[in-house]
Image (cartoon, rainbow, N blue to C red; front, side, top):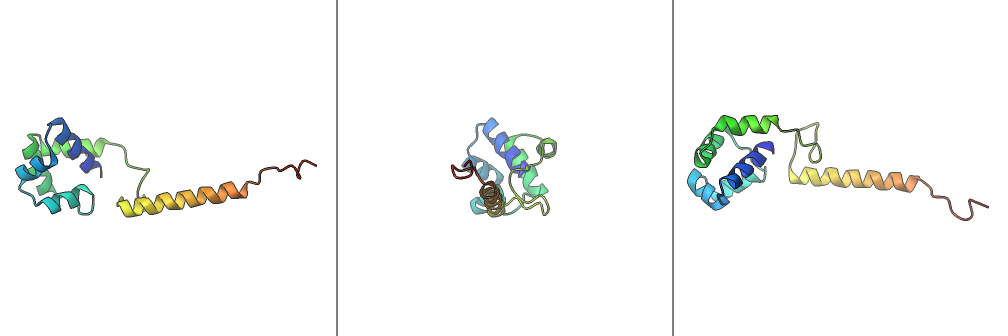
Length: 114
């Protein structure tokens, strides 16, 4: 996911639309968007082609992604799965756990103070 963020930031810095980047890379539109959503990983060949289209060094993309902090808000830290589906599941689990904790804390009522 960090590579995706770096690619998107580099694209925006280059003031290039996603459609233009897709055209310059020669990737299929569906393939590109699947990779951008994290459904399919970018491989090193993809990063080379994208870097060339963005007129930057492919190692810069990788180094920048590696230097960013890990995403701890979404995904599963045990498996490394950062898919939107798993992130939603984790958020739901967290919400349910919080709801149970709040329900377990009994607030004093008027009858408790008598």
